[in-house]
Amino acid sequence: MGTKAEIYDVVGVGFGPSNLSLAVALEEHDSTRNGTPLKAAFFEKQPELGWHRNMLLPSAKMQISFLKDLATFRNPASRYSFVSYLHAAGRLAQFVNNQDFFPTRQEFHDYLEWAESHFSDRVSYSSEVLSVKLPSGPGRSPAGHVEVEVREQRLGGRTRLVKARNLVVSTGLVPRMPTGIERDERVWHSSEFLARFRALDPTQVKRVAVVGAGQSAAEIVRFFYDELPGATVSAVMPSYGYSIADDTPFANRIFDADAVDDYYGGTQRARDAFWHYHRNTNYGVVDDEVIRDLHQRAYDDEVRGTPRLDFRNLSRVDSVKQTGDDVRITMHSVRDDSTHQLDVDVLVFATGYDSMEPSGLLGDLEPHCLRDEQGRLRVQRDYRLLTDTEVNCGVYLQGGTEHTHGLASSLLSNIAVRSGEIADSIAERRSSRQYDAA
Image (cartoon, rainbow, N blue to C red; front, top):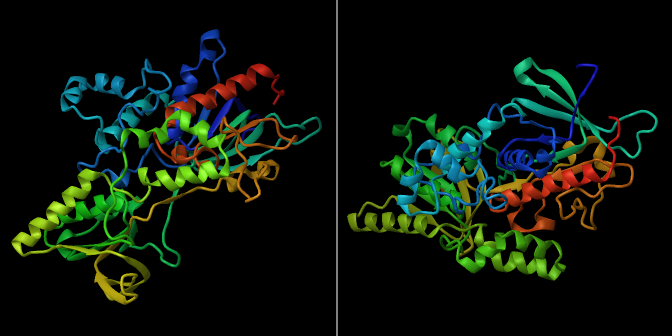
């Protein structure tokens, strides 16, 4: 480790779409026009940018408009917008001729990689943040910066120390599996789907099952059906069938920037109402097009007398175990309170994600972060953690703020505006006080 640490206005932990959007916002911030740009560095433990790579299924489309990209809602003239990407790729006219607001996930991922290519000087991949420490020594309270220790795998595991006047944590989501069930070579989570599928010999797969009732579950069922023409595909879901996502105009306003203000400033009763009435905009629901595709396939099979789609509705998985070369699923049916078993070659859990608890990453900062009566981190409107008087540096969260900022906290819908608000907050705090000497 070097004896002298580099000093940055912003250090980002993680470099997925959220912190990529922040990098864009920082570059385009007004502070760059007066000769004092905010100096930023980002550290990502993965070897490259990746956004749900294992769910880039053929024909799978985005569930939000292409205009909800990294920058447009914050700066419609941004050179990092999806439209700018299309122009650079020579496909703008063709995309417009499609008359479709929703690009494929593969194309949107290509857009993210295009935008990321402009920031290679600010991001270090295969770099894991090991610790966050408060500065030691006299006169260091309140702490105006933190010391971030990073291990860089590409440099033989060398450690590196950087100082951050502001820390922005964006570590993504954690795959959720049912309690007591572990992943292995035949039991997968949707987050690893394509990599696992490509390692299979499809001729040896005769029966598969997918657990879940949301978009990913339905898309994987459709993919299995199309890619494994000799296999039976079982869809195990707690509901009676797939429920349609509400993407109507008034419901979609729940993802507008103004809705964040309403949620953040609302009473607990108002916040509960947000989730009760509008959870079906994103959670456990499926796009109309995918539902109709699956129903048509099931209907066509009935006509032909060759049913391959097996819907196990009103069912929950109790246990999973290996029996020889098979995976045996024990399910409980809430329809008649019965228990039944199903043997498959592959079992996929499309059971969603949890927000990563940032406490482990906060290190020395964690005891200084204030929490609410339910033990959750207190987050201010600008996404900055509320800390005690011993800490004066900014600590921001990109994700994990559903309890304070509402439904869009872990989604792309509000990413451009959120990143702009964080950039504004960092710049304003810099201009309103004198940084410590670090």
